[in-house]
Each structure stands twice: as C-alpha cells, then as structure tokens.
Length: 253
Image (cartoon, rainbow, N blue to C red; front, side, top):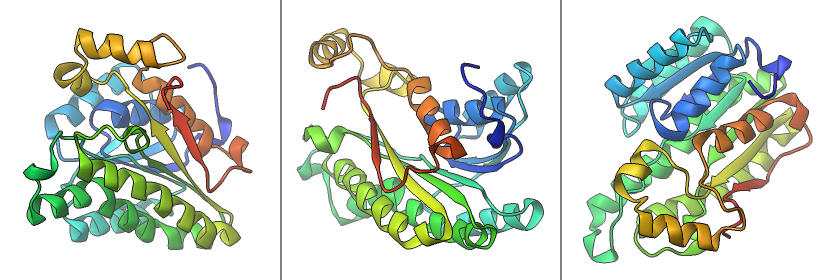
C-alpha cells in the first residue's frame, strides 16, 4: 500500500465491471483500504479468481454479484438490495466498458445500441440508483471511467469513442445537479493501460513502440496508475474536486 486513506475504511463502494482489468485493480485497491466493496461483472471465472487473490493477500474480502449490465432492471435490483442490507453507497465507480474494434461499416442499429448499453447507459442508471441514498446522507463521490481514445480520434471504434466522449457530459451534468447535496462527480480518463486484455489483443511490439514514442513518459502504464487516482477522488482528501476530467495517459494527449 502506497497511501492509506483512513476515511475509506468501511465505506460502501460499488464498482461496475470489477472482475478484470482496471476494474479488478480498483476492487483490489479499495479492499486493501478496508472498504466494503460490492462489484458486478459478467465474467464469473475472472471475478472468483480476483476474490481468491484478494483473500490470499489478506485484504478485506469484496462482495461479487454476477450481472449483465445490459439488464438495467437486474442492475437496479442488485443495487437496491445492497443498499437495503448495508446502507447507502458512499462511493460509486462506473468502470465497465468494452472497446471492441470496429469500423463504421461494421455497425448496424443493433450493434450501435449494444455499444451504448455496454459503454454508457448503465453509467446513468447506477448513478440514478445510488443518488437518493447519497443525498440523504449528505455526501458521496462518483467516479466515471472514460478513455482518451475519443480525444485522439483513433478511428477504429467509433461507437466506443462516441460513448466515452459522452461520459464527460454525463459527469459534468451530474456534478452540477448533485453538488448542492455535497456529492462530487468526476471522470478518470485512462490512456493505454497494460491490462491482460490489451496485452492479448493490441499491445504488439510495434504498437508499444509507437505508443512510447508518442507519450511524454516513456513507460507502459499499469492498471494501478488508474486505481491510485480513483482512490484519491473517492477520498475526502479530494473534497474540493468535482466536475473535472483527470487524464492518466503518460502525456499522449
């Protein structure tokens, strides 16, 4: 543990897409802080492996609920039960996404709607599901995960980049609406992060060389680079920060 945030201990934290990649790192970091972590993911196997890893490290065991985030009704039911059993969510981390590559010619109406559902729609509905409890308590922190891909205009995943650009507007709108209740909303915008998925599909030696040539910092970013910032924004030490986009991209934008 590099930094201990004492105010995060025993806080109720909800993370979407927490079973692998950046999400898994976020879950582990909050568990290490002693938070009460609840995470949803569609991948049962990866989520169970994560819980085993966290338990072996003797961090606080997180709570996993299997969920397809396209099923908003089920997602709402899960969050309602968590709140009924444990009290309001203190910290919401909207992380789940899928950056499958595609061209405009690959996209029909069904695929477009699916990409919006996976990469944007559930962000809105998780915020809606937790905000009343935060309002009643008089505090809360919401962190939405974006991507620098739309800033770069990479051109190989137009639906994903459209959704991720919309995360900025979603974040800023909720920050304004909920700020009077002492609820903060910020977005964290990662660059190229060496998750297992990225390494398997896209981090070829050629792409890595191109990446390091473009970045100001000449190292490959890790999931923990993102998780560390998420912890800061979740903690009260960042109590003056809201309506902002925090970029973690080693200076590629």
